[in-house]
Image (cartoon, rainbow, N blue to C red; front, side, top):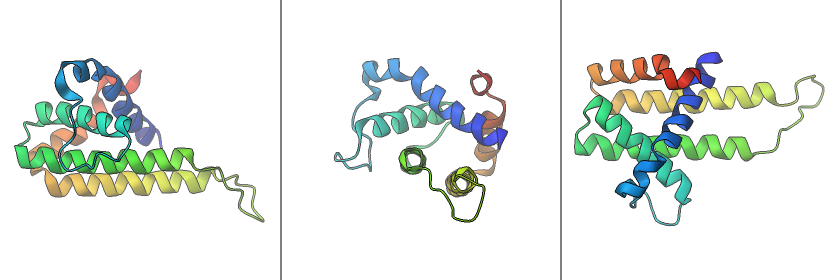
Length: 138
């Protein structure tokens, strides 16, 4: 669970760190993402993709696929965060376990999708970045 929180923090902090890059031209419409979707999610996905493209030396085709994958993860996590906490009848759990399980499934789908997009070396570097980025520990 700690790794999951660190990973989420990493993505959030990387997105925040790169907001200055949006003013330098990163904030343009992301390829493969329709204009009707929330700007903040599109922008965050573009920023994280730009970081990953640099760090992992992604090809143009990989960048498009990674942007879609990152956006989908952000969209799902955002929807989960905005969902009301459900109380499960006849249990003492107030929905935290269900929410954590849902978040874990979202992250697992994201990592599986990334494994299909990236080469083995890139995926190894990707997991290393997620686990060991100093940003994740702040």
